[in-house]
Image (cartoon, rainbow, N blue to C red; front, top):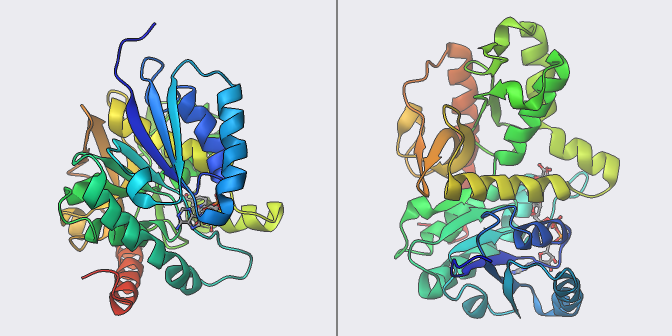
Length: 330
Ligand code: NAD
Ligand code: LMR
């Protein structure tokens, strides 16, 4: 039996489709370890509380040894109280044919009050990952409305893109997923993202020596970048289980560390590294240790990479300008 004290994990949009794939895995110990009890603090809008009560019944019916308690609320001040971790999932998903601008308007308003509530009641060292789209800019909104929390504690999910990039390369080369290392997703969780293979290895050998350049530029990059839309087209709904799995990977690596000698991709506030404008929540190669992340420095950036990295930064700047006009960030 474990003796660790429980930690508090807030999940917003907990009655939604990602929530349904996420909560059970957190409670099973997949995110914070098999020795870490958790208290789940679940936030939903009032009309979804009934559905959430059903999810909670199922959570309890699993009799997870690590699930110390479950709190549900439609009040962010309750759901974020003393939270150690927050997974901000609750937001409207993109539907076929929707414009990104529609989501900025519809979802931007959710993240200001949540940032304020985190500022007011969460632990000061809370780790936040934003999943709800547009994830990078929503993270910026939450961060800017939580002035008493270290801005670096606000991150966004590009791990799903990272995992997609690993899997696509494994499929192409016939390698096992575990033999693929050091892919980077630079920038925005959107179709401008740059899945970069320039440092990646397959079985210890440079990935770009093992695939044709034409495939990399013409097939691989767009396939990874547009995978979200392909899933919406095929399923009639946006990705859910894979998004939940990626969110678990993101927090697990941040909290427990990335494997020795490897990096992962996280969207984090830019400190100006690699010429990315400071403050944007931008996908970088990161290593994590002792609950902290740091950007992998010193990687060579080709002209091809520079163009892609700048284009996705440009899109994030435009998103920031738009939410500034809405009064959601400074
Ligand atoms: P969903 O519609 O099934 O669930 C969203 C839930 O959020 C609903 O239950 C809704 O009631 C709730 N909600 C809405 N406003 C809320 C608020 N203010 N506070 C708390 N809860 C609120 O959607 P989903 O499929 O679970 O997707 C959630 C979000 O995640 C969407 O924005 C989607 O686009 C995004 N997403 C991101 C990634 C990624 O990689 N970053 C991947 C997949 C989906
Ligand atoms: C995804 O990448 O699957 C999600 O962000 C859904 C979307 O809107 O693309």
